[in-house]
Length: 107
Image 1: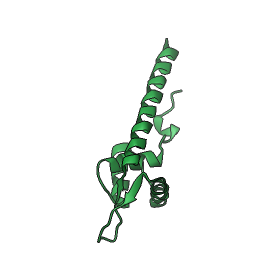
Image 2: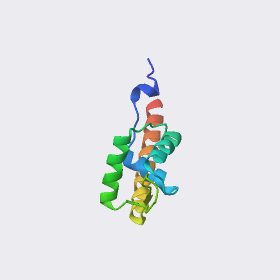
Image 3: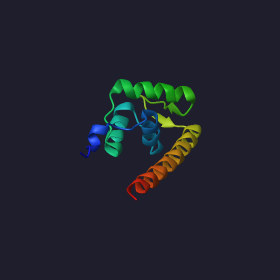
Image 4: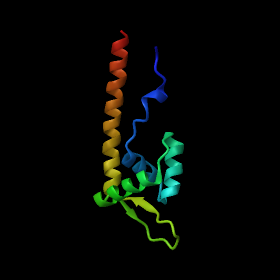
């Protein structure tokens, strides 16, 4: 019996999703949550997002932006952009291997 893709769960890395969201421009947390859900279908809880933001900021991959608003926006840094490029390249290799192996299994 074929499994529905929803049964497999989500294969996501919150840090990757945050970097992808911020690669488009600076955003505050709730805007990131909406953006991430829109482009990935992944719904994040605020605590999950803010934990990832803290880890990314500690690595120097994102930084807060000065703002007079109550919500604190973040932006991706140069090293964050480099890390994102590297991660996306790895994901492309993984995707290509998966496609090849699925096709091989059907032969």
